[in-house]
Length: 111
Image 1: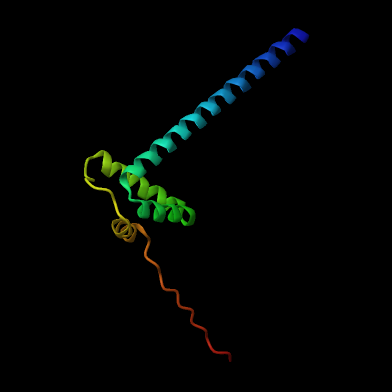
Image 2: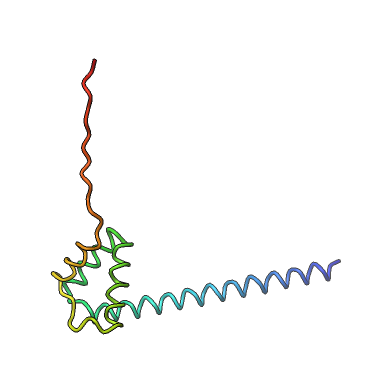
């Protein structure tokens, strides 16, 4: 009985160690991916455009992520020849940003 319990403990400990090692590997890969992405964006964007993208990332992370991915895909396909400046980034943002809807509230008069 004690042997079975010890064996189960060892097996569980091994599983936990494997899981922890796998999580650490994933974190390391994610960190490398973010670093590569950062270096690519430095090459693609002017300082002003990078600053604007940073502010967008704080306010709307999903939109910033989408823009970053699109810029990287354009660069990888060879469709970007020059660095993207602030005005070009603003134009791209206007295409991607959802249209604002006007909300009007109508109040009915009291009886």
